[in-house]
Length: 103
Image 1 (cartoon, rainbow, N blue to C red):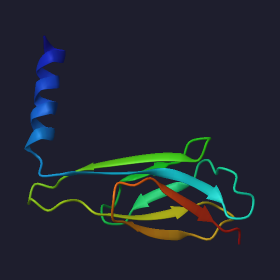
Image 2 (image 1 turned 60 degrees about the horizontal axis):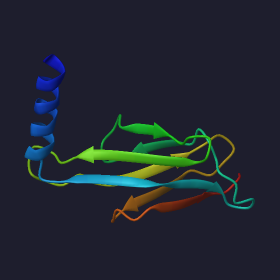
Image 3 (image 1 turned 120 degrees about the vertical axis):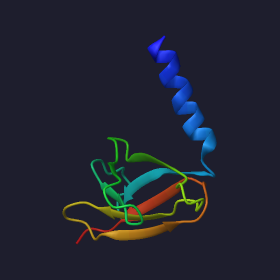
Image 4 (image 1 turned 90 degrees about the horizontal axis):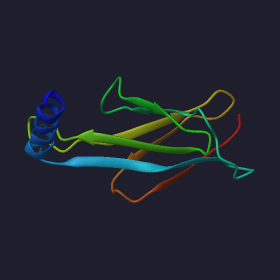
């Protein structure tokens, strides 16, 4: 019963939001084109909202619309030791391919 109530509350919260933004994609080495794991991805528009790529370089970030009715933004910073940090503004839900260059 508690699971059902929690599910209904979660669904109600999601339906009450104005929008939801999803950023998906893969991070690759610029020269080898091989996937990069453990790349730290920070959403600069929402400090503290971060993720790391998986072993296949894949990532998926979801942010629910804010209470003030403004849709969330994804201004993503990709960083990994030994690589140049890159920042990308996500404008659509199309999957991203991010290439990081070695320092």
